[in-house]
Image (cartoon, rainbow, N blue to C red; front, side):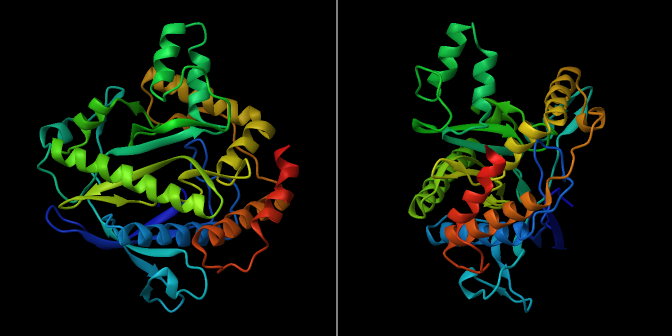
Length: 355
């Protein structure tokens, strides 16, 4: 079981044939790669499931191959989101084989992917695709910029990757969309170069180019939908499988995968990350320090070394965040399944916990 959703296997995948399963979305949430946090957010699972399913359907209508097969309604039938009369927290998906790199002597070994490049099928590509259209509050870019203070040439080179000559301010957009890759199966998402991403992907050159082309189209379509409903899509992540061709997998374009903003305010789990950073800074800082030490010393599971646990959120905040997810999902999908207050009203009430 994942920290926020459970993968249920119905038919196991093989080297030559996709499997079948489902994602069951819980109301749990995770930040800082910690795993499940103390609270559950009411309605969050159904909100994200409905939003993700709506995105898959939109993308497939535009020719994007995905592992999505349908969403499960209250009668247990596999349907499209337009057929729903109430929210759902479970979708049916094609399953691919999970092949993880070996952890040995303090580092991850991708030898299997490298030696079998272009010959693998029905497998989860061991990469996360990161796209950045701008620099919202909480972006890792600000941390990197701070690390490069006083190193003018390095900072200049780093900023040039995003078409910038000066450090951005929170909320700034870049001249064009930029892309990064990180590892998928490591406890801490490790940023890698395009060349390294290709080397460990298990994909041939043509297959890797197919991944890049799909990535660009997915970002354009999801960001376009966000614009239509008044959201600004700043950045996000995607995951892919290879099953005879590259397919979008996991989920994309939700408030947990993307950082959307409405009228300059976070409408994503970044809100929760910023809350913990401000009001439970001892735990937050302990995580950041321990992750860095674990990386330097080749320790796989950094969480066991933190020595402090996150505290639960105020109950009224938990309720409001649930409303944010549900109202935001209705706004994005246009399905109006949750019968909740307007998103603007919810965001006004959340401001008390933000300021």
